[in-house]
Length: 272
Image (tube, rainbow, N blue to C red; front, side, top):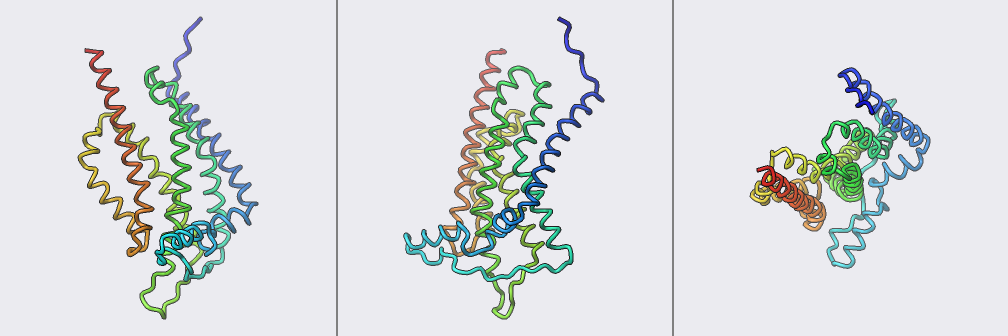
């Protein structure tokens, strides 16, 4: 049998173009479906963390009853939403629909990119990255859920009830509310890619498990500062609730880095 013909640079660009067009079509289709599902996507998902009956607030009040820590319960959200521009509501409708399309289609986007990259890898590299699409998609989904049900409600609660003076009313523009919510949720989805990121950095030789262990205390301090910024400062339980998953991700990253580091050392010993 004849060997497969080597692709030129232009052929690779053409191949990459179709690997990107297909997920873009998927995102567009899901965006259209989400646009016509306004009551659920916008009315429940987007506006949900801004309502006092949101699942997270109800669970916090139940936790306050069990622990006796009354400050944990969110009893009011002191703000109203307004649209101060003529196209504000329509623009945010499009933005929230596109975000839903991107989040739902994200696993397919990663899979298409992996299909483009995979043929250029060696057999050992393919074996080492088995399940990478599933891992990235799973961590992204967990991060999205964590951002939506934990970080976003705590941030909205803090910002909504923060006042310099009782005479100042919190009247947020719908654009500001939606943008803040989307940024928080997507940022958490990306932060939860830390184990995958550390895996590739270790594979490339930029970091080692020794480096991660050495600066563990520094990393934990940074995580606690981030948790303090997105939660009410006197609420220690809320801060720990946000910081704990980040610390857990860091520890998982150390484990993954150590596993990859040991594997590379064994390969070097075999070669020599």
